[in-house]
Every structure is written in C-alpha cells, then in structure tokens.
Length: 211
Image (cartoon, rainbow, N blue to C red; front, top):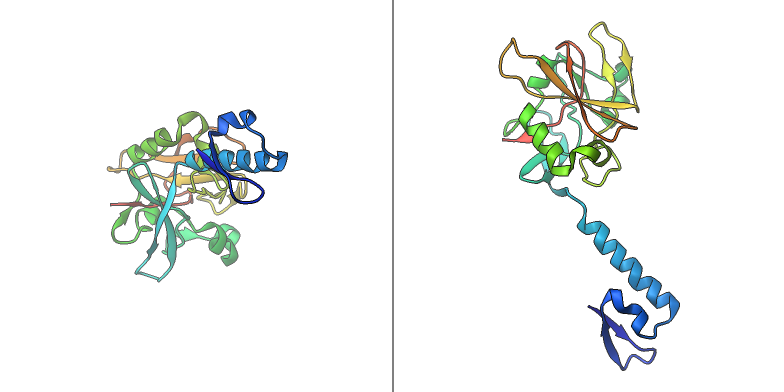
C-alpha cells in the first residue's frame, strides 16, 4: 500500500501500486510512485549483502566482506604479499587496484587466520546461489551481488602477463598433490562462470571464504 496526501495536505488515501489508474493523481506523482516501486523490486533482487570488513592481521590491510547464501567471502581480491605473488606487469599500482596474482603455492598462503582458500565445492555452491546461467554477469564488478570480481588477468609461469580488464581467474583449493588445480574464470563478456585446469605456477587472483 502507498500513502497519498492531497495538495493541501489534508486528505490521506491509500492505493496499491497496481491500482494507480483507479484514482486521480498528477502524472509526476504517478511516475514517482512507480519509480519507487521499481527501486524496491530491484533492491529486493540483490543477492549479496555487504555485512562487514576484515582486517588482515599480517599487514593491516582491510577488505570488505559479503555474504551470499550461507557463505561469507572477501569482496575484494587479496593483496597480501608473499614470495609466490606478483603485481600485474610488476606495477605496484595494479596490486592496489586489482590485488596480487598468486601461484598455487602463494594462493594457499594468501588468506589470513580465520579465512581459507575456497574449495571447488565452495565455488560451485556460490555459482548455484546466484544462478548458473548468469553467474559471471552477477559476480563480476558492477554486477548485482556485490562480489565485484575484478578482471585482473593472468601471470604465466614463464613471466608474461595477459587479459587485464578482460578476464578474472580465481584459484580453488585442492587437497592432494596429484589433484588438478581448478581455476574459475569470470570474463568481461561471459554470462556463466567457466572452470578450467591450470599449471600451479600460473598467477591468478584469490578470494577468501570464512572458515
């Protein structure tokens, strides 16, 4: 229901938004009510919710966190420096904007106490929560979830860099040395999230999930 006050502020009426044509209102008032209704519908469809922030006790960096379903994730790429991590094209400004690119060994050490590298199951659950067919659209920066996956590109194991502002690649945790290293790919023009295998020496982004 919507409360409507007349021009003199005296008479109060109530109307459902789908019955606006049944009562007299100025066109600009109708437009305002409809816009508020659309905003409510849009806001109600947002899946993620920024709920907190996390301070990395190792270096003092602060990261936004987001809860999607029952999972709480970091809402920014990790930027904790360790020997197995790099800035894109060795440019520190890229680390500030996109986070660091980690080898698998570096990724396993990237999350602070109380957080961990997400597993294959964690990523699959996230994708199911937001909707598999449009997961990339919703999870990338500017999407509807607030996950804001950045297109940070890749550092190849031979030292070259590629795909900045085109693709974001994210490590998942493996439990044994003989298991494949799975990476989740979110592209700028992709609708769904792709899962690929990679050499452990390539450099990709890291998001952490609360333990």
